[in-house]
Amino acid sequence: EQIEKGGYEHFMLKEIYEQPNAIRDTYRGRLLADKGIIKMAGVDDNLDRISKANRILIVGCGTSWHAGLVAEYIFEDMARIPVEVEYASEFRYRNPVITENDVVIAISQSGETADTMAAIKLAKEKGAFVFGVCNVVGSSISRETMAGAYTHAGPEIGVASTKAFTTQITVLTLMALKLGKYKGTISASDFRLHLQALEAIPQKVEKLLQSDKVIKEIAETYKNTRNCIYLGRGYNFPVALEGALKLKEISYIHAEGYPAAEMKHGPIALIDEEMPVVVIAVRKGHYEKVVSNIQEIKSRKGKIISVVTEGDTEVKELADHVIEIPETIESFTPLLTTIPLQLLSYHIAVMLGKNVDQPRNLAKSVTVE
Ligand code: G6P
Image 1 (cartoon, rainbow, N blue to C red):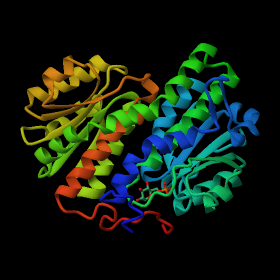
Image 2 (cartoon, rainbow, N blue to C red):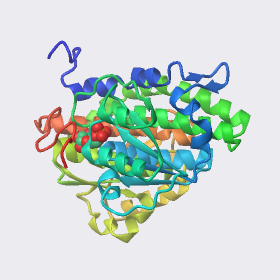
Image 3 (cartoon, rainbow, N blue to C red):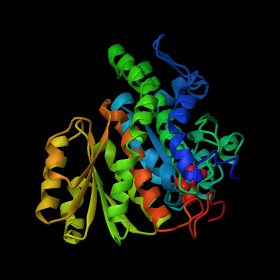
């Protein structure tokens, strides 16, 4: 097992650090920036069917569901197709309105999650075109879906999902860009810009991983907290949910993710000098709005841990701690902002002596209801 961990103390840490290469492996052979094209067999073969969809319905569980939420923003932005994202477990037990003009995308790292599988079967019965995004090659879900794209992240052993999330977002981004280009909803110059920006993400993740020391210090300061709030807006709202999920899963600290503006409809009541609030405040994407959310937290004496864009000055003055991410285009910020939140949870869990790779009560793959 030590050999499999490749010198890292835990699989989770190894998998966090594998993300630059995992993302590269995901887009290798698909993203051809010099030619200005995206090649994805599963999408290419069904381009007409998928691009004419009345809507895209995304189903998944846990972290895969969060990747679906990020994809909702990406698909609507780039391909102008309405998207709905649903927990597979809810979808399968209501009476969903699905037509033959719908495309269902099922996201699953393991490809074995029972609820996601049941959702796929239901969607197929109703005549929808079902596309799978899985990591495990040959898994049940990859066989049950009509077409798909693998994430190629390599085996993920840690129960808390890390590289599966960022590679799922990468695949879905490629797909949305491809559809956008085909439909003409993204301009040729914007398309190229996005290809270049996506290609540059792995090296930005590498740079970001060097800020681990700062994150460790933050973990040390807050490891004994009993609660934590995560806030983000737009593309980074799902990242707030994912950040909170990571903390819950491995450190057993109660955490809640919220869209930053929703804070005033409830969570703000929880804020006092004891409450750490992790705020994603990257420069693009409603920056000024998030700054005013931060001011509201500060005036209630909450402790602010902020993920900001390199060179930020405004949030730095307000926050108790800042973690910087390199600049990228707004739609790709989740691929960067997620990483420090993974590390923060990891360090806190290690400091608390928890079983990081196999947290209590959780399973890597939930194959029963
Ligand atoms: C379990 C795992 C999570 C994962 C979820 C969905 O709860 O502990 O990490 O996100 O299942 O799994 P899937 O394999 O379908 O992505």
